[in-house]
Amino acid sequence: MPDQSPADQIPADPTVLHPMPGQPRVVLLKPLVTSPLIEVGEYSYYDDPDDATAFETRNVLYHYGPEKLVIGKFCALGTGVRFIMNGANHRMDGPSTFPFPTMGGSWAEHFDLLTGLPGRGDTVVGNDVWLGNGATILAGVRIGNGAIIGTGAVVTKDVPDYGIVAGNPARLIRTRYDAEDIARLLAVAWWDWPAEHITAHVRTIMSGGVADLEAAAPGRN
Image (cartoon, rainbow, N blue to C red):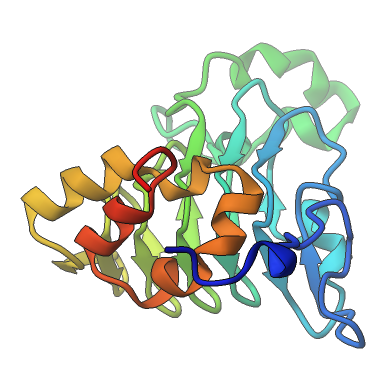
């Protein structure tokens, strides 16, 4: 049975920049971002009391491409979450790491010294991920679905589905479910359900068990 009657099943609007009336500190990222190097799924949001709309410039740093930042659906990003992209890399095979050619003048003639720097590929955040205040995600990291990133964590390596990590460098504290239940949750993939179906089963998604979620999946009832 759905959590609500059909008359009440009106999804939230994923195209509204500020989804919470009177709270300009919260923005949905999909209608905000303009960079072709950033992909964000519906309903993922960023919360910042200073200027949440500056996310692309204040929170995604050194993003010169071609690597992308990909954020899934229904992700919650706390204030000060930052993504350090591949453009932050410096040469480390010589005596100095200073990027002389970027300073201009005749130094710019040596721009070839900055080509071919190591890159780790796209940075990917799965669906239903909660990133705590001040978390830093390094380039090329992949964060699994349902993961939780602790406040102030510095994530230097991949995070498994439904993993909880914290610290600097971040380490895996535990997973939220055992391997069998994680596989079941990934198979259900509630974040891909139609918005109306999600709306009808919000209570199950937020507080139900794995079996409850499976029973609520489209086509099961």
